[in-house]
Image 1 (cartoon, rainbow, N blue to C red):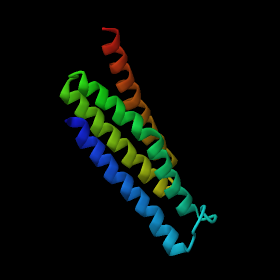
Image 2: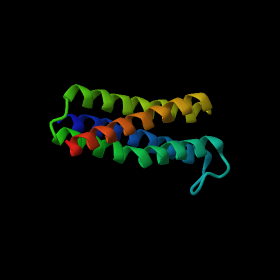
Image 3: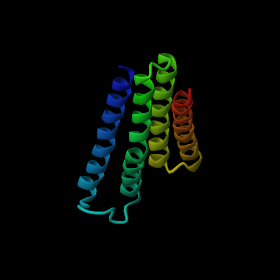
Length: 124
């Protein structure tokens, strides 16, 4: 199943984002919250933002795959979503607003495309 590939890659990336928070907390000795540390704030937001959007993408990919949607299209959407999340993470890490906008725009574009594809299949 194609969705298993992207679900796994995204889960591994989620773990990486989690460890970034842990690393900053440990280094800066911040147990709760962000302690006013912008690096920790950015790591927390990258992690939270990831988990806010990723379940929808994986679910929509899965539903399309269960309906025998075009496998290449599913791969393109999965790769694009993964890339969008990596770009967003890098943007927050570098505090680069332009890059963040690109990451979010690509995230929204993939979610929109997946939603429309599922709606079209439902209607037909």
